[in-house]
Image (cartoon, rainbow, N blue to C red):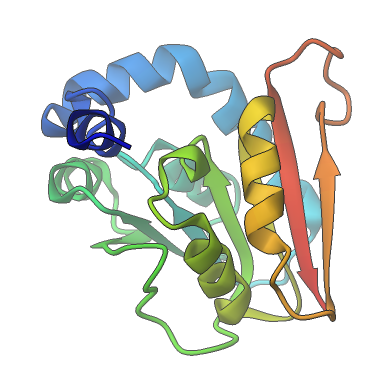
Length: 193
């Protein structure tokens, strides 16, 4: 990948340096998906105190929606861009912990989270194989990861998940249950034994 293209992908075509504008842009395009993911998390039936990680949070809209519905969950959210995390922290009520971190090097010990979610960020991951391995590493036994992304990008995520241990099931939902067949978003589900 050329340096210019790599930089454009990493910076979301420059919007990473303007988190408020990115938040408005993403809010228009992804607000329905964020509501869907928050509903999915609410319907999962996680017990009070369960840990949730949002990878690639941007300005933090999704974890704040989850926290509104499930204030009893412990929610962490990460993004590579310090500008995005600063915006997320400014918008937060304190119910979500935001941090600058890379999915390929998550700063938590093994088996920390009951659920890891990622919405429309996997296709930006520089090293998706390392990212998937880290997501799997921080999942508790019986936990799950939901990687929501464009359907065309899910094959990349699925290939990145292939090296995971044999005890991890990987399933692709494309399109999402209850969505029209032409919906552009799908989900990869990881479940460790």
